Amino acid sequence: MVEVTIYFHYGGEWLTSPEPHYDRGCVTYWKGYDPDLISFIDLVNEYINKLGFVGVQELIVLAPTGKYFEIIGDEGVRTLTSFISTEYKSIHLFAIEDCELSIDVTDIVMHDGSFLLSPIVNEGTDCSESEDDSNNGMVFSCSDYDTDELENFVTKKKRNITDSLQDYKEIVKGMAFKDIAEAKQFCKLYALAKKVELVVVKSDKKRLRYTCVVDGCPFLLLISGNLTTPGVSVKTLVDHVECGTAYDNSLVDYSTIALYFKDKLQSDPKYKVKEMKANLHRVFELNVSEAKCKRAKKEVLESLEGSFVDSYNKLEGYATELRSCNTRSDIVIDLSKEALSNGKRKFLRMYICFKAMKLGFKSGLRPLIGLDGTFLKGKTKGQVLCAVGQDRLTFISDMQKGLLEAVRTVLPEAHQRYCARHIEANWCKRWGKGELKSCYGGMHGHHLQRSFRTNFKR
Ligand SMILES: [Zn+2]
Image (cartoon, rainbow, N blue to C red; front, side):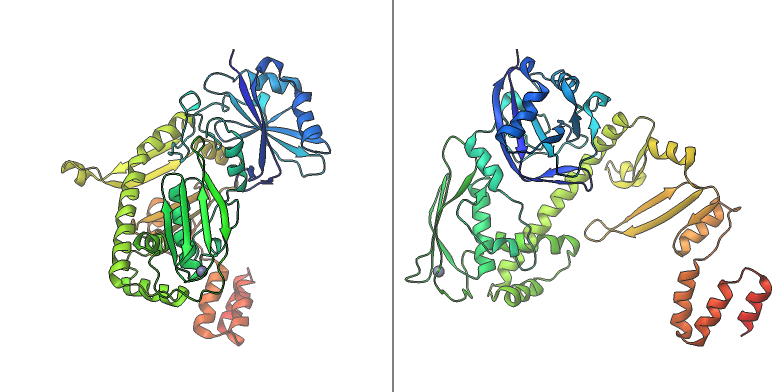
């Protein structure tokens, strides 16, 4: 018999966009549980008696695919337990309290085989996986939690690297990090954000200790974990007294600068080393050498290069996966013929049209199609084109010249018109917003030729 661990998530919040998902929150669990003994009422009662829920209006389980399903009564529980195997034995449950808004998720009984499918895009997870619980593709895939890990899970939050490094301006006791490397990275960005220079007193696999460079400042930061569990946290923290600004900061090394400028360089690889230096001076009053910025820039561009290559290499796998779980969808990847003849594989374009969209359009959408494209910034360049709908009677696009020609060639029968609001905008640009604008209004408001002419002559 496979014993299961049931995780009860609570205290977070449900977000509905882009897909329903549970954000943050806490976890409690039953370990080594016999699946045959699971009953709906016991699960609900855990939420009510132990976790203080007033009542449970929906009991929800997170499938290994990342989709949520509702469990209704013991029939739902039996469907769930039918999936249990050595591969799937960690069950993550969520509940919607009586007073909360309900969440629209599929009843597990209607799972159509999508409960255990492997995830569409396989991305490496940061968590270390244990042998017996590997590859279940879950959001919470870090094998079985123990209490320390759970605490980590609870106090960890996502930090974004913004212009002002807002998320890096505060350290608090109990703050958790994935490992010492992540903690170090945080401390360096903290030093940059707070304009303080820290000194590493101790740094090994499980401990990090910093003091402040300023004589007499009591600042002390100790981050550690223990040998049996992953994750480290802030154990001791004594804050700075007034230490002034660190204009030169040895803790801010080139990799910290690289981290700070990563997004900027990704969208604008031509962003200058001089500008990087000036930016750091303006925002953080920091003096750094151009050489340091140059090295940071080089590192970012090289790692982007690697990740671009990686992403393109994943495309084919992505297409295969799409084809296998969306049969009769059109998924085409074109490689450059010219490059192929030289023995190289160069991406040219990719086209995706899901079966559901084809069927949906044909069986009842309005005969209308919108086509738009956008240029990609950053290293790759190129365009993303997106079509909404399918050709019948009406075709919406911008006034891009190539597009107008292409539509005329491919769809010679189609009527072409310009959007009145856009013509008005251009009209106003040329003639101003005065009297002539009202003439324009008079023109397009009239369907009869005669009144159009009258207004046009005006
Ligand atoms: Zn200090």
